[in-house]
Length: 156
Image (tube, rainbow, N blue to C red; front, side, top):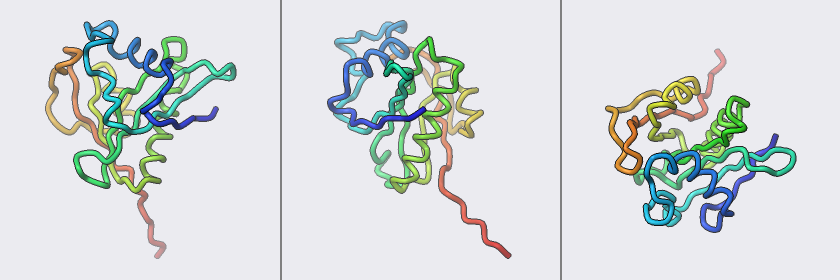
C-alpha cells in the first residue's frame, strides 16, 4: 500500500469531505461557516487509497509549528468508517513521522480527541498538558507529543 503526498491548497474535495464527515459533521460544526479546514495555514496531506483509488484515510502535516523549525504539528487524522481497524491510521502516522524527520523535525505534536488517546499512546505519543475542551467540537482533547529524532548508537 502506498501513500500519496499532496499540498493542502488545492486538495480534491474528497479529502475535505472525508475529514468533515469523520471529524466534524456529527459535532455541530457547520461545514460552510466554521473555520475547520484552515487551508490558509498550508501543510501537506498524506492520502491512503485502496486498489480502486477510493480514499481510505488522510493525515495533515503542518509546516513549522510554534516557530520552532524542529517541531511539526499533526492535524486532521481521519480514516473512513469502512477502513477502520485495517491499519490505515497506523500506516499514515508512521509515514508522517518519516516525512517530518526527512524535513528536519525532531518532534511531532497533536491535539488528540479523548477517544483517540489510546491509539496515539500505542504509537509512542505521550500526554503533554491538561485535558481541554475544543472550542470547535466541544469534545475533550489533550496535547500529545512524540520525539522522532533518529538516535545514533555509538559502537564501543
